[in-house]
Length: 111
Image 1 (cartoon, rainbow, N blue to C red):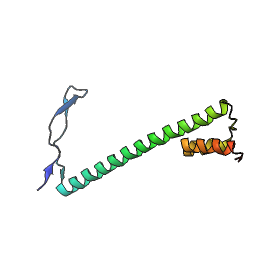
Image 2 (spheres, one colour):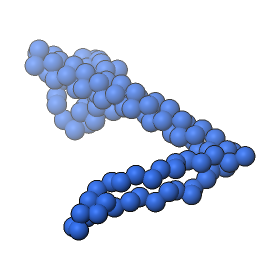
Image 3 (cartoon, one colour):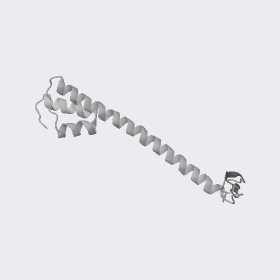
Image 4 (cartoon, rainbow, N blue to C red):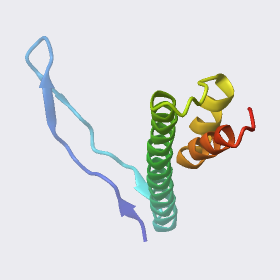
């Protein structure tokens, strides 16, 4: 059994002479198993994209908060130096990375 995707015969627009341009009837048919495989693949791709966007949103928020904590510690007088190593650690690890950098500085372990 085969399904017909679209059968239509519609007037779409007028050309220069005033005649309508006619879209011909479509003869495309799709096998049901192919259609189901494509539908399942599309759903898997949509779920994967949703998970990637959800994870990326979490990582961006964590990174911004980690950098803000590091800058806040610097300006509150803890004196954590703002250098590339500290910024990269707090950007990649987020809040735990910023806390680690602050604790290492407080205990006298330079980075």
